[in-house]
Length: 123
Image 1 (tube, rainbow, N blue to C red):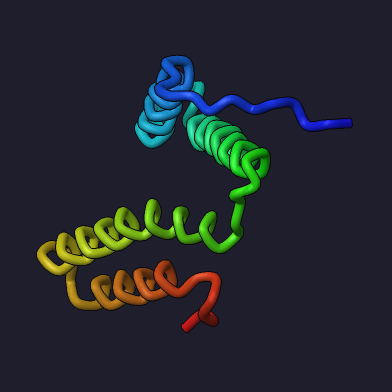
Image 2 (image 1 turned 120 degrees about the vertical axis):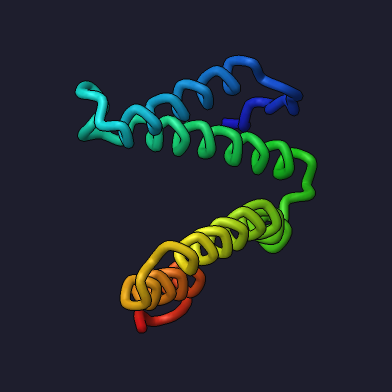
């Protein structure tokens, strides 16, 4: 059975709407709003959206005959690593200003774990 033709698309307002719902759900979860206080519905929504979009992108490239695992992972790294690095640096700078030295050491250890995981053993 042949794989159905997958169309490339531009902006998808329904996906933007789902992302907005996911952000609101995550914020409400962190604020411990009763119906969402114990769950991670927003994170689940993000996982579903990401899986859909990544799968669609892969299928389009497979149909064109241009899919490459190396390029796929390079694109992921170019998309994720700048935000990861900015978040770690900002968190550490804020911690440097506000945390006592023992907690700052703990923050440094956690930052190391985030940057190395899963390729480095736990320190």
